[in-house]
Image (cartoon, rainbow, N blue to C red; front, top):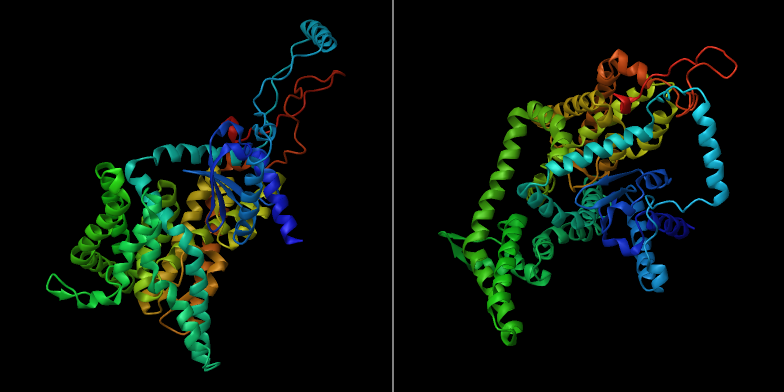
Length: 545
């Protein structure tokens, strides 16, 4: 049963993250289970990576376990249920598991005697030469990728980047609705073009547009919750943006339009509401708080929103849409080259989160974002690079096994296992993968420049998972073909760049060995017990460099 499988996955995950009492928060996004961890030392990273359902782990502001699209949405409720059950059981069951670093129990007298005897023998035996380094394995690459991620995380903990991260968290819970409505919009467009089911088309149009017409309310609600205010008050002040009655209000000499300012206006309004509410909580007497605080929060913030924020945010949103259209129309190839090539470095720097409100604004204005298909080419470059690594290292079964297990997720747009488990720790393949993303992005941008716009009706999915959400200004077939060819260019360029330029001769020689057939760690490499010649030395892995 699928439920049993999801519950089994959740049951396997819970003890490996330190148990229920080691969790401060549980959430999920499109592909990852995001956990707040109390004691990091209780998390067993290698055991988590070894689970069949786990595609990788990423440590950021939360501990993130990559399970893949669809799976994470089914495992998370089971995980929450098991965690809640564990918290309500006996105190003994609530005790966190023993850390893997816990000291070993004292040895028995017999064991101590055996150890002393062994020490005596070793004292008189010839000195054993140092152990031979084993070839680099996928586990070592994953550890290096995690170390790189940890170092990058510490560099990304600046106030600006932390603020952008919180802004991104506002939009993550909205992605499933954007995807669902986007696919319905695509189906509706197909039925309209074919002239099928004319009585159903208006209903589908309503379903596809209903959420977007009220997205400002959801953004306001999420913003207040993320920044420590009362969520419903954030939604209340944002609701004025989409209220039809604002059409009778004049600001800056112009009549306001319902929806003017969109998600940017809602974001600003809710942030202001949080500040006003917190001020009221500090200064309003407790006896009057329940009446005065919500009234002042909605009144003050609402008036500022109507007579200021809606107009300003509307101008900013219009400027974003105009600039994106102009950029791709006049310099699409170059813009696509830059965006596709630099997207993964932007992710590592934590700056990609600034794009999420821009994507949402474009979807709200134009019905799709023209930036996402270009940025999706970065994942295509990673897939091509991974395929090249697979072919260039035929003897390293460990790395090849990791690539085989991560490629299906990579084709669907889940790139973390390939990035942090393969290309980034290897160094040069990460750069050649970015070259593949740049070429794919340049290809899609070039067609945007020619007038064949390729956009996405939602944010979140990438790779092949983006096909149901692709939309443009030409026929659906043309738009799909351009996107598919862009992926092909990204795959091919990433593959060729990595195959021919991804490894130096020395590095390839070090990596291209089978760890299973190499001398185990600790095995003697000097003269054998029978007086034979020393065993040949195996190449050192990356960890020895």
